[in-house]
Length: 118
Image 1: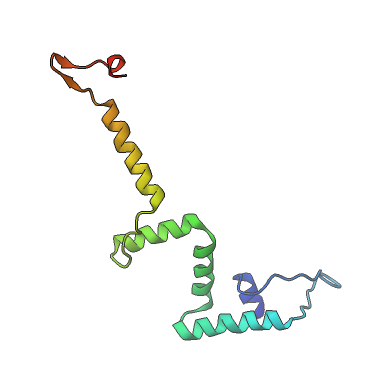
Image 2: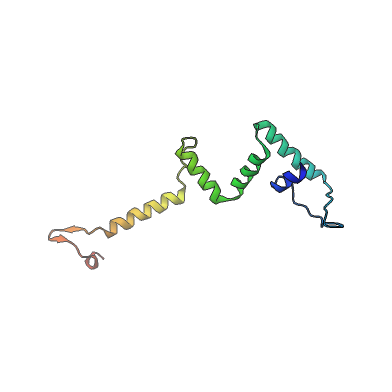
């Protein structure tokens, strides 16, 4: 079971080099055991298998996957759309201002050429 959890990325990385014929005999530190216990506690608390916990960690670690999962959650109605961030608001504001500049202004005799606007 430990090798399975290690293959899923649910164990702290091994710092020891293989011994003998390539076999690894792992020594667990107190921190290693605490990490394994925390993973088992999460699995029990939420009723999930180790693979679900491993995928949740992958989602948190990889922004591209997080974005795709969030978009799916929004499409099926499980997640509300992410709130607009300040930078997104400023970007939209700048785009609106640029669009206004590109639209020809109406003068008394028709549209004002772009060179005459400045």
